[in-house]
Length: 619
Image (cartoon, rainbow, N blue to C red; front, side, top):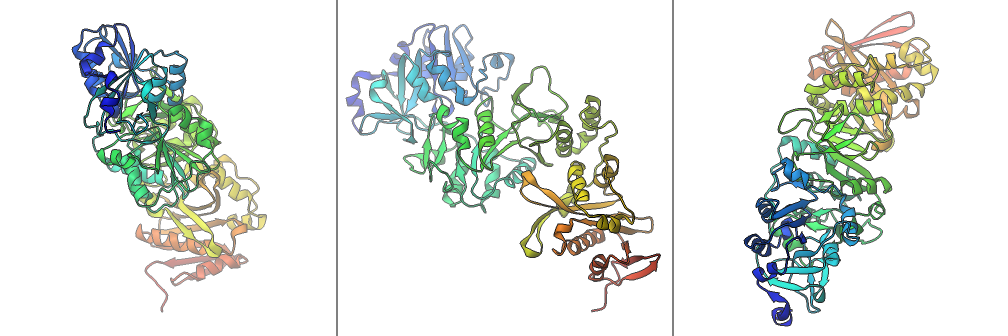
């Protein structure tokens, strides 16, 4: 509508006159962050108004400046801390309102949080006289619907976005002509720790997943690891620059959604001018209010919903804590809880929480035995499936407190694992004889870790054994027939209690290496093979195997022997030796396939096989 100023001339005011419509004691909703109506806010600051209570979803620079004038004039309540409100002083925390993002609109509409005046920023109107809330629909639409008076700053640089973003002209009481540049988020510089976290996180995103990112920098780090995915979808709290890359590359096409097929959904947008231009009248991106978009059953209607959020601390039981930001810009209740619940309702869904293993500020462990007195617990023990640090991924779904504590200690910073294990023992979370053993360095774990395709198309996940593998090693043992048990141990063994299994899952790299093969999806993986070498005093290593009988004939034993030999050779081992029953023809055949000269001796029905890595067979 090119002549909107003429059409709405009776509603058009200067910023100063619009501010004069507000009375002492009013409760004001202010458009937040990227959508701060700055001209009107500046006019409020220059006025003589007193005792105004301001409410802002995400704190913005100009509203924070008003709040700094003193609580007798302006009190700023927000649903997030951090960012420019990094006056994370006791005063700013005192005015933080801890509500989940999806709850806020209902509090506005029922006047449990009353709003007298909504001051928002909008686009220019369309031919029907409707203004768009642009890049910040979230809770702003409900604020506009609930306020006694609506004052809108019209900004021609505000994009017109699709979805449920429109306000009829007759709902706005006063208009202010206010062209200005939208606030742009500064570029985020992710260090090697953050990149490693996002690399692990990306492994949990399969083709066809629908993604959510919170108010965090995680999306930027993930992008480079997701370029080889296909048919991803977006149902998220915030739309960012990084998502533009994936849409333009064809990685995101939203084709797997049952509803809103082909469209990315968000409540708001935050980034640079590039993303604001991208969402302008873009039919591929739609914005909806938070009480609609963040409703857990709506989120859960997407199959393979993957919700990715950040935390400040995780305790050994799996509770999630928020507090001062680490590598994100903002912190608060937000939509984290809504999306975690929604992912739990999704078929094949995953809820993921990421954090550095140590605090950026103090260097202390972010995985802790328990939280302090002022801790804000945002998620209980049952809501996060995966915890990710730069040291790996801990799967907590369906795990006992002991299993959770063990898994979390494994991904804690190595400098803190021994102390965490000691405190876990004192709290009764683990066995009284449980100690921390470093089975392998991060470099060795990365060297071993791979996927391998065995015969008949079987995909196996190969990695170093972990202390949390007790249950899987036990299951592998009990899947063996007594004949296989005898081949492995040279004696009948009918049980594998904790004391025995502990030896299997606690082999340190100074003594040797234990490698396992697992199959199946992450949530339901099972171990089908375990192999190890233990270095003897003469520089040779004793080697042994356990392979699930259901998977004999897949070439697993041959692969593992070759793989162990390759790694042992790199680590200075002279060669391998093994004792094999004469009747165990399949295992003897595996050794005979080795490219080294075999030296055999037979005694009492047992063949001792030895070979040196520097003694290859003649071609």
